Length: 194
Image (tube, rainbow, N blue to C red; front, side):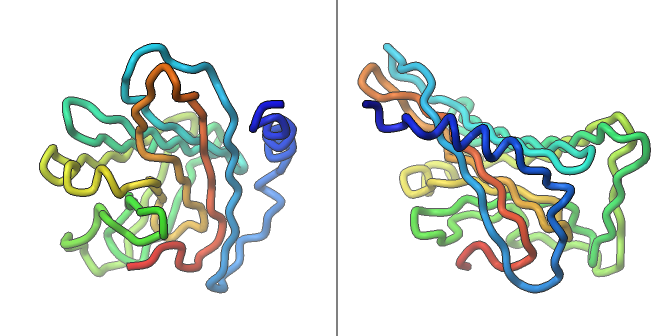
């Protein structure tokens, strides 16, 4: 019996959840959903990118994390499949963020740390039937410092209740099974430890 025998049933159950029926709360709490299932193993040693996605209403959010030439590239793609613009009111000029967490949930890297944003109320939008892509990149030196301790990458549009999480890219070899893992966090509460 494989270790992941029950996971496909869980994936089907999670796929049946309608996120449009989940009420958005303004309290500081949240919940998470994660799914892992095996794919094929690899016969050579390589760094496998990570990916997670979820949808609500007519919005699809996708997180891709990839190691390229010693750098870490993080991309949050937001697609609006609806017939009207998806608009978000922001408390300041920051539209999105990325964070890398260790196994205990401690923040090792946060894209917005040390950045200055306008303190005026702003808004952002994704036009109907269009996509917006938000990226962050860690150079070789910064990535090398946290590479061994980083476990999860989380991305989100600021001032929305949705956060999407995936694993850091992993090195696989002939004896390492490849698994796909993704998760979302719903709620406005703190999800990391600064």
